[in-house]
Length: 295
Image 1 (cartoon, rainbow, N blue to C red):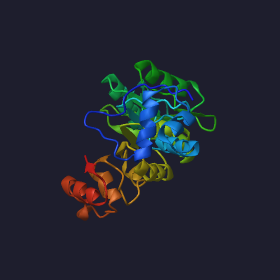
Image 2 (image 1 turned 30 degrees about the vertical axis):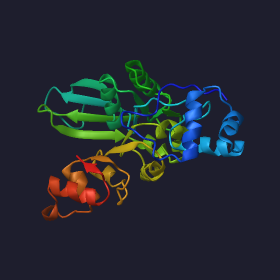
Image 3 (image 1 turned 180 degrees about the vertical axis):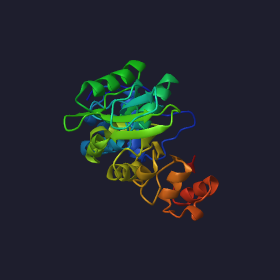
C-alpha cells in the first residue's frame, strides 16, 4: 500500500471529532508512514487486518483519504458542482422584426452558476475543483479547457455522448431588454445520484461544496443525505424559481443558501402575491425549514 501524504488534515483550530479512536489511530499511522501496509498498521495497533481495512473504507467515506492509493487531501479545498453552459447573447442593431432576419451583435461566453462561481474562486486563488456534465463536443472541451487553464481541477467532469453541452441564447432589443431567451439544458438530467459514487471520496474531502439547482432533484437530495456522514459544509444556489422547487422541503444539511425573494417564496409554497414574504421573513422561514444561513 503506497500512501502519498500531501497536507496535514487539521486546519487552524480544527479537530477530528467525527472519528473514532481506532479510526484516528489508523489515520495517524498512515500520515506518519506513507509506506505502511494494512498488516503493518494492524500489528502496530494490535487489531485485525480486516478491522484496519474497514476503518480505511470509513476514512474514505468521511473524506480523510482520497480513494485508492490512500492519498490525503489538501486541508482547504472547495468543490463546485452544477451548471456548465455556453451563453450566447444577441443585441439587436435595429428594431426587431419578427418573421425575418435581423442584424445583431453577437457575444459568446461560458456560463452556468456553478461554473461561474468556480471561475471566480480560482481567480481569487482558492483551491477549486469543478464537477459538471458536458457533451462530447468542441463546446464542452473548450469549456473544460478554459477552467483547467485558469488552474481549476476539472478531473471529475463527466463527458457524455447522449446530449450536447448545455446552451442558453438571449435576444436583446435596442434597450438591452430581453425579447426571447431559449435554453437547452436537458444534459443536466443525466447527472444522476449514481455519479456521486464515482467521485465521492474527492467530494467528501472538501472543506466546502457549492451546488446549484441545475442538478436533478434526486441528485440534490442524495447529496444532502450523504453529506451527513462527511465533513464538508454545503452551499446551495437556487438559480431560478422553477429550479428552486428541486430542493426538498426539509433543508437540513444546507449550511448556506443563496436565493432571491421569488425563489424563496416558491420553496415555501407561497403562490398568492398578497401573502409573499419579505426577504428577512423568507430568510427566517427557510432557516426554520433547516437551512443554516440564508442570503
